Length: 270
Image 1 (cartoon, helix red, strand yellow):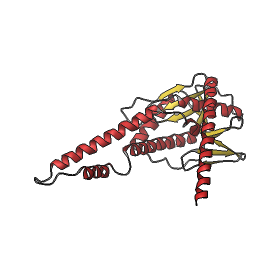
Image 2 (image 1 turned 90 degrees about the vertical axis):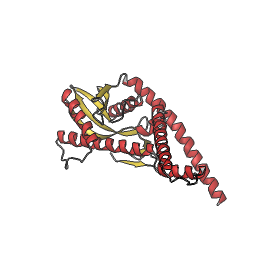
Image 3 (image 1 turned 60 degrees about the horizontal axis):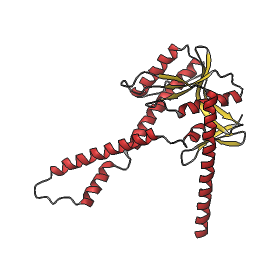
């Protein structure tokens, strides 16, 4: 079955399966507000600004006596220069993404090796990513982990969505969809994601699916060990996911209409 994947300039991901374009599960779930993420961004930006302002204050105190005081405009310009073009939230997010990507690469390499597939050299990784991978190994050894496949494209022609599941595996003898996370916590929308994957696999004929799980891997030694949490009531979660899918469709169509109107108006004015 021919499947292609693309990401638009806004970061939204779409799959084309048998000529039908459909949004990814993660793109659909982006329509859900994430207050914890907003709060983290606010706190990170606030801390960076306070630290930069304090450093500038100290440096100004070191200026020679008799030096004219800095104007408000000059102070603001100096502070903006110290903050830099890339905000702290962007730097921290990029760092977290890199650790997560490396941890995923290590797990995928290990799972493919367990499946007997040809794998290349072991992926290079930072200490934080290695810590996450060791947690995965601890979990795998504790549940008689036997992979069935990894990085598999899942889709539903019925409900028009697609995605890539981290793995389907036997966990203590049960066929379980597993999604890896390297976030600080396990958030509710993660369970909507694995429920969508589970129902997609069922529709594709890869069932029976006995369960779905979110496996959170730590990124540093101060973080607790792995967290493996099973999705409860997959049918109910999938029903909630379909509601989110409907909201996303409404939002997407409205955005496309607004974009088309903007382009048309710009052409008229050209």
